[in-house]
Length: 129
Ligand SMILES: [Zn+2]
Image (cartoon, rainbow, N blue to C red):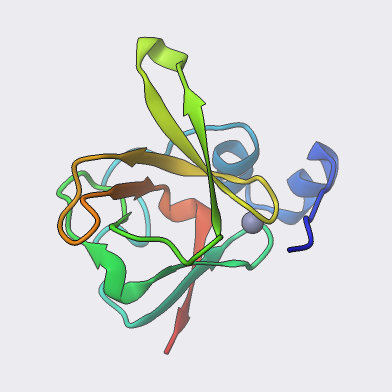
């Protein structure tokens, strides 16, 4: 996979202020504020920064958290790293292609994976099937 690497200035020029803050500055959007937490379209969710495919709509579920949630990612699309900020032990998930911050991964999701990818809407775009 070819990495897409750009400077903060380049990303700032490309992205909306909200997407820049979440994806490049590790921010978190307010719950129930995003475009996709309650979205039920069929298709593919892609990285807002580099357009890499990240999640299929049939792995999305209603977690009740106010963020779009998935129990599985597209294979190889996601990089997991330990995040000990805010005094919590969490797993941060990044886009493997461009290192965009997407959200966090929790071990309390539904079958069959029991995983919950908790993702910021603003880090995603949607491609209808
Ligand atoms: Zn990306």
